[in-house]
Image 1 (cartoon, rainbow, N blue to C red):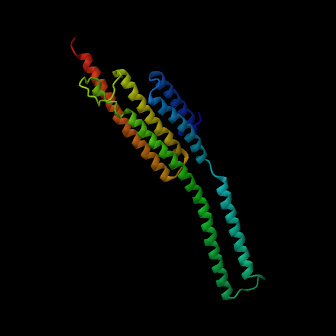
Image 2 (cartoon, helix red, strand yellow; image 1 turned 135 degrees about the vertical axis):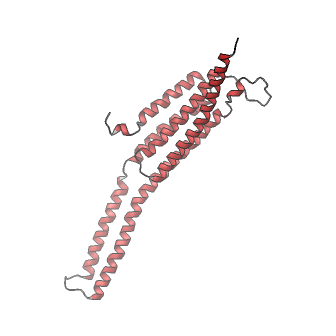
Image 3 (cartoon, rainbow, N blue to C red; image 1 turned 180 degrees about the vertical axis):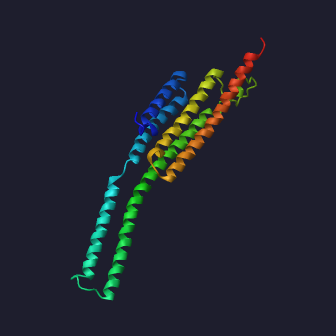
Length: 241
Protein backbone atom coordinates (compact mmCIF):
# COMPACT_ATOMS: atom_id res chain seq x y z
CA UNK A 1 0.00 0.00 0.00
CA UNK A 2 1.38 3.42 -0.98
CA UNK A 3 1.85 6.18 1.57
CA UNK A 4 -0.81 8.22 -0.27
CA UNK A 5 -3.48 5.51 -0.03
CA UNK A 6 -2.64 4.86 3.64
CA UNK A 7 -3.69 8.41 4.46
CA UNK A 8 -7.23 7.91 3.11
CA UNK A 9 -10.13 5.69 4.13
CA UNK A 10 -10.57 2.64 1.93
CA UNK A 11 -14.27 2.66 1.09
CA UNK A 12 -14.17 -0.92 -0.19
CA UNK A 13 -12.86 -2.23 3.14
CA UNK A 14 -15.49 -0.30 5.08
CA UNK A 15 -18.18 -1.86 2.87
CA UNK A 16 -16.72 -5.34 3.42
CA UNK A 17 -16.81 -4.75 7.19
CA UNK A 18 -20.50 -3.79 6.98
CA UNK A 19 -21.25 -6.90 4.90
CA UNK A 20 -19.59 -9.12 7.51
CA UNK A 21 -21.49 -7.35 10.29
CA UNK A 22 -24.80 -7.96 8.53
CA UNK A 23 -23.93 -11.67 8.16
CA UNK A 24 -23.01 -11.88 11.86
CA UNK A 25 -26.28 -10.25 12.95
CA UNK A 26 -28.34 -12.51 10.70
CA UNK A 27 -26.56 -15.61 11.99
CA UNK A 28 -27.07 -14.61 15.65
CA UNK A 29 -30.55 -13.04 15.40
CA UNK A 30 -32.29 -14.41 12.28
CA UNK A 31 -35.44 -12.51 11.46
CA UNK A 32 -34.67 -9.65 13.84
CA UNK A 33 -35.41 -6.09 12.81
CA UNK A 34 -31.74 -5.24 13.28
CA UNK A 35 -30.93 -7.47 10.30
CA UNK A 36 -33.15 -5.33 8.06
CA UNK A 37 -31.61 -2.14 9.44
CA UNK A 38 -28.10 -3.40 8.71
CA UNK A 39 -29.12 -4.51 5.21
CA UNK A 40 -30.51 -1.02 4.55
CA UNK A 41 -27.31 0.44 5.93
CA UNK A 42 -25.26 -1.70 3.56
CA UNK A 43 -27.28 -0.46 0.57
CA UNK A 44 -26.92 3.14 1.77
CA UNK A 45 -23.20 2.71 2.38
CA UNK A 46 -22.60 1.40 -1.14
CA UNK A 47 -24.51 4.31 -2.64
CA UNK A 48 -22.78 6.93 -0.48
CA UNK A 49 -19.32 5.49 -1.12
CA UNK A 50 -19.86 5.89 -4.87
CA UNK A 51 -21.21 9.39 -4.34
CA UNK A 52 -18.26 10.43 -2.17
CA UNK A 53 -15.85 9.19 -4.86
CA UNK A 54 -17.68 11.22 -7.53
CA UNK A 55 -17.74 14.37 -5.41
CA UNK A 56 -13.99 14.08 -4.78
CA UNK A 57 -13.31 14.30 -8.52
CA UNK A 58 -13.25 17.70 -10.27
CA UNK A 59 -16.33 18.60 -12.29
CA UNK A 60 -14.73 19.47 -15.61
CA UNK A 61 -17.99 20.78 -17.09
CA UNK A 62 -18.15 23.64 -14.60
CA UNK A 63 -14.44 24.34 -14.94
CA UNK A 64 -14.52 24.38 -18.73
CA UNK A 65 -17.41 26.80 -18.47
CA UNK A 66 -15.29 29.05 -16.24
CA UNK A 67 -12.41 28.90 -18.74
CA UNK A 68 -14.81 29.77 -21.56
CA UNK A 69 -16.06 32.71 -19.51
CA UNK A 70 -12.49 33.93 -18.96
CA UNK A 71 -11.72 33.69 -22.70
CA UNK A 72 -14.94 35.55 -23.50
CA UNK A 73 -13.95 38.26 -21.05
CA UNK A 74 -10.51 38.65 -22.65
CA UNK A 75 -12.11 38.82 -26.10
CA UNK A 76 -14.58 41.45 -24.86
CA UNK A 77 -11.72 43.54 -23.41
CA UNK A 78 -9.87 43.44 -26.75
CA UNK A 79 -13.04 44.34 -28.65
CA UNK A 80 -13.70 47.26 -26.31
CA UNK A 81 -10.12 48.48 -26.76
CA UNK A 82 -10.46 48.36 -30.57
CA UNK A 83 -13.83 50.13 -30.42
CA UNK A 84 -12.57 53.08 -28.44
CA UNK A 85 -9.11 53.18 -30.03
CA UNK A 86 -9.52 51.76 -33.56
CA UNK A 87 -6.54 53.24 -35.40
CA UNK A 88 -3.90 53.22 -32.73
CA UNK A 89 -3.66 57.04 -32.62
CA UNK A 90 -3.52 59.01 -29.41
CA UNK A 91 -6.77 58.85 -27.48
CA UNK A 92 -8.47 61.87 -26.02
CA UNK A 93 -9.20 62.12 -22.33
CA UNK A 94 -12.88 61.38 -22.92
CA UNK A 95 -12.09 58.27 -24.95
CA UNK A 96 -9.61 57.11 -22.32
CA UNK A 97 -12.16 57.50 -19.52
CA UNK A 98 -14.82 55.70 -21.54
CA UNK A 99 -12.44 52.89 -22.40
CA UNK A 100 -11.36 52.44 -18.77
CA UNK A 101 -14.98 52.48 -17.61
CA UNK A 102 -15.95 49.85 -20.18
CA UNK A 103 -12.94 47.72 -19.26
CA UNK A 104 -13.78 47.85 -15.56
CA UNK A 105 -17.44 47.00 -16.19
CA UNK A 106 -16.50 44.06 -18.40
CA UNK A 107 -13.98 42.88 -15.82
CA UNK A 108 -16.63 42.97 -13.08
CA UNK A 109 -19.21 41.28 -15.31
CA UNK A 110 -17.05 38.38 -16.47
CA UNK A 111 -15.26 38.07 -13.13
CA UNK A 112 -18.64 37.65 -11.45
CA UNK A 113 -19.60 35.04 -14.04
CA UNK A 114 -16.43 33.05 -13.41
CA UNK A 115 -16.91 33.25 -9.64
CA UNK A 116 -20.53 32.11 -9.99
CA UNK A 117 -19.57 29.06 -12.08
CA UNK A 118 -16.78 28.03 -9.72
CA UNK A 119 -18.90 28.44 -6.58
CA UNK A 120 -21.84 26.71 -8.29
CA UNK A 121 -19.74 23.53 -8.53
CA UNK A 122 -18.88 23.76 -4.84
CA UNK A 123 -22.47 24.47 -3.79
CA UNK A 124 -23.86 21.63 -5.92
CA UNK A 125 -21.40 19.17 -4.38
CA UNK A 126 -22.10 20.50 -0.90
CA UNK A 127 -25.85 20.02 -1.30
CA UNK A 128 -25.47 16.41 -2.44
CA UNK A 129 -23.04 15.63 0.38
CA UNK A 130 -25.29 17.19 3.02
CA UNK A 131 -28.30 15.22 1.73
CA UNK A 132 -26.30 11.99 2.06
CA UNK A 133 -25.07 12.92 5.54
CA UNK A 134 -28.64 13.69 6.63
CA UNK A 135 -29.69 10.13 5.71
CA UNK A 136 -26.81 8.75 7.79
CA UNK A 137 -27.86 10.89 10.74
CA UNK A 138 -31.40 9.53 10.48
CA UNK A 139 -30.07 5.96 10.30
CA UNK A 140 -28.06 6.50 13.48
CA UNK A 141 -31.25 7.44 15.33
CA UNK A 142 -33.01 4.35 13.94
CA UNK A 143 -30.24 2.15 15.35
CA UNK A 144 -30.52 3.96 18.68
CA UNK A 145 -34.24 3.17 18.78
CA UNK A 146 -33.47 -0.54 18.34
CA UNK A 147 -31.26 -0.61 21.43
CA UNK A 148 -33.36 1.83 23.48
CA UNK A 149 -35.50 -0.80 25.22
CA UNK A 150 -32.60 -3.22 25.69
CA UNK A 151 -32.16 -2.33 29.36
CA UNK A 152 -29.68 -4.76 30.98
CA UNK A 153 -31.06 -4.23 34.49
CA UNK A 154 -34.41 -5.71 33.44
CA UNK A 155 -32.85 -9.05 32.50
CA UNK A 156 -33.00 -9.97 36.17
CA UNK A 157 -36.30 -8.20 36.85
CA UNK A 158 -39.06 -10.65 37.70
CA UNK A 159 -41.61 -7.95 38.62
CA UNK A 160 -42.93 -7.45 35.11
CA UNK A 161 -46.08 -5.60 34.16
CA UNK A 162 -48.41 -6.05 31.21
CA UNK A 163 -46.76 -3.00 29.58
CA UNK A 164 -43.20 -4.27 30.03
CA UNK A 165 -41.30 -5.02 26.81
CA UNK A 166 -40.88 -8.68 25.94
CA UNK A 167 -37.54 -9.97 27.23
CA UNK A 168 -36.34 -13.12 25.51
CA UNK A 169 -32.58 -12.54 25.35
CA UNK A 170 -29.99 -13.98 27.67
CA UNK A 171 -27.24 -11.77 29.02
CA UNK A 172 -24.87 -13.04 26.34
CA UNK A 173 -27.37 -12.40 23.56
CA UNK A 174 -28.15 -8.94 24.89
CA UNK A 175 -24.45 -8.13 24.99
CA UNK A 176 -24.00 -9.25 21.39
CA UNK A 177 -27.07 -7.28 20.28
CA UNK A 178 -25.79 -4.09 21.90
CA UNK A 179 -22.32 -4.71 20.52
CA UNK A 180 -23.72 -4.99 16.99
CA UNK A 181 -25.55 -1.68 17.44
CA UNK A 182 -22.35 -0.01 18.63
CA UNK A 183 -20.43 -1.39 15.64
CA UNK A 184 -23.07 -0.13 13.23
CA UNK A 185 -22.92 3.35 14.75
CA UNK A 186 -19.13 3.40 14.45
CA UNK A 187 -19.36 2.35 10.79
CA UNK A 188 -21.87 5.13 10.10
CA UNK A 189 -19.19 7.54 11.26
CA UNK A 190 -16.71 5.96 8.84
CA UNK A 191 -19.09 6.24 5.88
CA UNK A 192 -19.70 9.87 6.79
CA UNK A 193 -15.95 10.45 6.96
CA UNK A 194 -15.64 9.42 3.30
CA UNK A 195 -17.19 12.77 2.37
CA UNK A 196 -14.58 14.71 4.36
CA UNK A 197 -11.69 12.50 3.30
CA UNK A 198 -10.90 14.39 0.09
CA UNK A 199 -13.39 17.27 0.05
CA UNK A 200 -12.19 20.57 1.52
CA UNK A 201 -15.61 22.11 2.06
CA UNK A 202 -15.80 23.47 5.61
CA UNK A 203 -19.58 23.04 5.81
CA UNK A 204 -19.34 19.36 4.83
CA UNK A 205 -16.48 18.75 7.26
CA UNK A 206 -18.50 20.31 10.11
CA UNK A 207 -21.50 18.11 9.21
CA UNK A 208 -19.27 15.01 9.24
CA UNK A 209 -17.88 16.00 12.64
CA UNK A 210 -21.45 16.43 13.94
CA UNK A 211 -22.35 12.90 12.81
CA UNK A 212 -19.21 11.47 14.40
CA UNK A 213 -20.06 13.28 17.66
CA UNK A 214 -23.60 11.87 17.45
CA UNK A 215 -22.51 8.28 16.81
CA UNK A 216 -19.82 8.49 19.50
CA UNK A 217 -22.36 9.76 22.02
CA UNK A 218 -24.88 7.04 21.16
CA UNK A 219 -22.10 4.44 21.24
CA UNK A 220 -21.09 5.53 24.75
CA UNK A 221 -24.64 4.91 25.98
CA UNK A 222 -24.50 1.40 24.54
CA UNK A 223 -21.14 0.64 26.10
CA UNK A 224 -22.48 1.78 29.46
CA UNK A 225 -25.17 -0.90 29.14
CA UNK A 226 -22.56 -3.49 28.18
CA UNK A 227 -20.52 -2.49 31.23
CA UNK A 228 -23.58 -3.00 33.44
CA UNK A 229 -24.07 -6.51 32.02
CA UNK A 230 -20.39 -7.29 32.62
CA UNK A 231 -20.76 -6.09 36.22
CA UNK A 232 -23.85 -8.26 36.68
CA UNK A 233 -21.97 -11.28 35.32
CA UNK A 234 -19.02 -10.55 37.59
CA UNK A 235 -21.31 -10.21 40.59
CA UNK A 236 -23.09 -13.45 39.74
CA UNK A 237 -19.81 -15.34 39.43
CA UNK A 238 -18.65 -14.08 42.85
CA UNK A 239 -21.89 -15.03 44.61
CA UNK A 240 -21.35 -18.03 46.97
CA UNK A 241 -23.25 -21.12 45.90
